[in-house]
Amino acid sequence: MQVPRRKLAFSSCLLTLLSCALAACDTGLPRVDLGAGGTAAPPRGASDPRSPLRIAVGAMISPEATRRYYDELLTVIADGVGRRPVFLQRKTYGELNALVAREEVDLAFVCSGPYTKGHEEFGMELLAVPVSHGKKTYQSYIIVPRLSGVQAFDDLRRRRFAFTDPDSNTGCLVPTYMLARRGETPTGFFRDVYYTHSHDNSIRAVAEGQADGAAVDSLIWEFLNSVDPTLTSRTRVIARSEPYGIPPVVVHPRMDPRLKERLRALLLGLHRDPRAAPVLRTLQIDRFEAGTDSLYDSVREIRRWVEANPG
Image 1 (cartoon, rainbow, N blue to C red):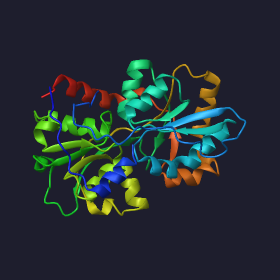
Image 2 (tube, rainbow, N blue to C red; image 1 turned 90 degrees about the horizontal axis):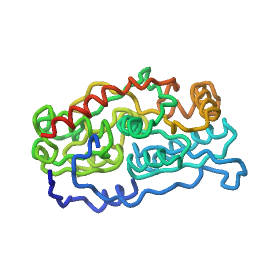
Image 3 (cartoon, one colour; image 1 turned 180 degrees about the vertical axis):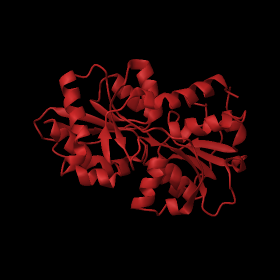
Image 4 (cartoon, rainbow, N blue to C red; image 1 turned 180 degrees about the horizontal axis):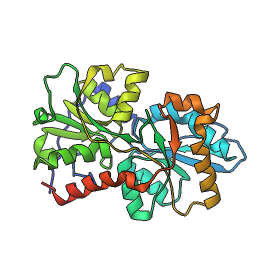
């Protein structure tokens, strides 16, 4: 189905902020080009003679925020296996999956949707999953401006809606599934649709009135609501999806087995590490546990349903 591209009315302030950011759910929606993703500099010790441990983090939050919250954790992980940390970022989930597929990264923090695609396409392997607030699941939140008159998802018909990434489970696949169950498509239901390429940018778009609604990762919304509610306090959650398997930590299946097991053991014990424990608390991660692929079966099920019912 051909989808006409629409001109999006961004304020110059929001566009500047979004420009700093970076198919199960590739619905052909118009995309906002936020610039090419790139490789970030190592957190520290660029002259460190140790072999690098290349770690990538999906663009669930914007690059600056990711770097701010993950820098110390990634350094602890690399130090734990005697390597030099090299932090990589890409604009989209698809680009990050490609890095893993080409074995250009050793370890990656990815979203649930990209994990199921990577597992299917090249055997992307679970290394560990975070436990947050006692759970290994998360949800999609549908949010609107706090003072909006919108009370339910159906009230968003003919309004502006922000998705995060075409491959995002909570930021794209889930709301597309919600519409498909109604016999609708995003471009048929909403007046305007666009991608922001990170969940905090979607929250900002709603808080600033640049979108009438958005679908965001519950973990990100709750995290930002806890550490700095400047944006979340200007939004309101009107719908919560069923729970899905939490975004995991993954590796390529051909990774050296000895390094793989060292990394797994390190992650599973991070909550007992005096350097890592306070970082995990800030990220609202209780601990890491071994994951099972079946945790992501519900993501696969809704993806198959959307593919079989394109509207």
